[in-house]
Image (cartoon, rainbow, N blue to C red; front, side, top):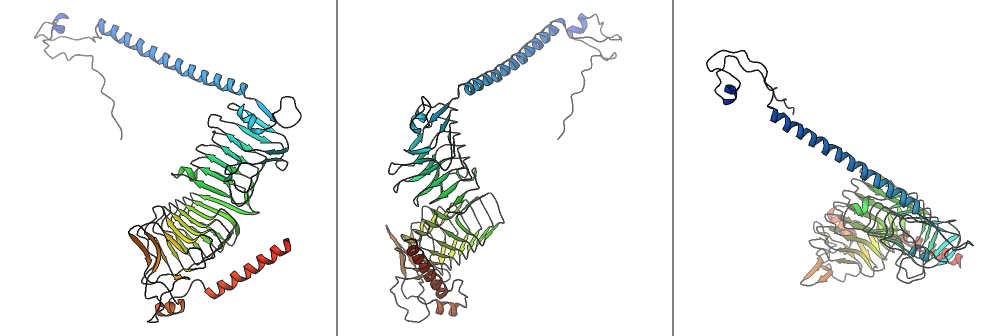
Length: 472
């Protein structure tokens, strides 16, 4: 859309116009006579006012430029002073004045300091407070600079300060630590080139933090856990080049139309992803095997998900399909929070320590059917709303169902109680008694052959037992 400049002011008066103004009379115009007019400039007092305005505008402009210059100069001076005042503190080694513990150095550090830690074993827990920013902890050698957490229920390293770096260490913890590294309510933290070793606990726990970089770490134990109320707590991170238990650790964000297949991994984290496929993947020995957050229209199929704390975890995700998977020997097989309109179907879910499938925390309108729940401590739990444990009059097989099937259609004559909560009972209204009869009567093809799955599970169990005997 354009605009037109105002027409120039006409300073030449029309010589045929009769003027009655006092200004014209003052200039000697005799009314009614034709005259030839000459250009008339603004009155002297108007020139004076305009000059003063021009001077004032010029002064304001110069003042603004001066203020901006002083601001830039002050910032540069502050940065220079900060840089000059930044120190390197030493821990261990033989130098005079070196600290004997890392926490002592942290307690005496200020913004921008570097703490250089010589090789050795440091039995302590480290806390970087919120008021210490841009701190760098650098180990002399990743394999020989060891921090071993000694406090129960505490992280070995807890970071609250912003823009902090932790690099070149081996970090371990005791049996009962909550995590190895916890990053809380902060941003731009960097965890680079470390060996992080946990006893099946979370190795790196990011809690309501943003822009965290986790790069080139060798992780043993549970892997990575993320907690946060908004998408930026999940998809602003850089997580690359890490291994978990000697296998892959994948962090995939903000992508669509992708495929992950035929791999052995310890953890897959999907954030803000759509229309993807995870297929034929063996996922094991992580805190969370497949972690899907803020994602939709993805399919997880034909995977073996085992020996994790959470096998599959859906958070703030919708319209995903979990089908044809073997989900076994996890603490929780499938765990769903704040997620809706997902389908969980045709999975064999067994041997999970606490629960086979747990729906909670604002999860609604999920559909769960044609699954085999057997030999879990608790087969299922539903604390959500409007979830359905059946589809088209076909529910799930429950290993502990004791109802009858008098009409022989493969569907139990009484509902299976999934959960009981205040004033409400959640039921599978059409529990499966016989897959064969249900499949034949509904003309369906089973996605997971139960006998084959049981054979695979038995073989895996035998192999694990033999390996343990060899290790002894």
